[in-house]
Image (cartoon, rainbow, N blue to C red):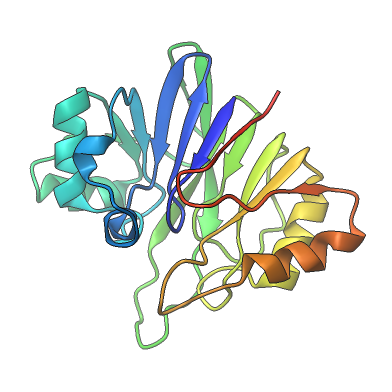
Length: 217
């Protein structure tokens, strides 16, 4: 498995020859010299929730049309995409769908309260073949799956803070932890602080720069 990080919570997962793109939100194009057209050979798009830093309809329309790939998401995201005439399929909590012999399970996540707003988005995490878990934006969860690779949000406020992310990671005990969701100017986080917090744990932690990849057995 090859895992490539982009800003905020966007990752490209290459697994068994299949390219799965998760949450290509607005910061990808604002913080990198990159356009939606640069996402090529995409087989499947997974969207955790409808916030712009995860779901950018204008960019998604280009990516989907260029790659002729399906989008899997929850009902709230599907409704948002339908307003932009973008087709999508719902994957419900605890549902397992198979894509090119890869099993993808939808895991319930819980978004933290957004300051100044009453609306809390519905969030769906994704477990890919028990190999990789992307929880999306979530507070600490008691119930969560095991995966070899866990992508963990760390910025606090709307998601786990660093200590909660550490506890979350220790509960799962994956082979590799990759921090995410610290690139927003509004809710910034420090991945080096998370790395330091994890230094007394017997877990491998890797900070990935934009566009950087790691190979995982």
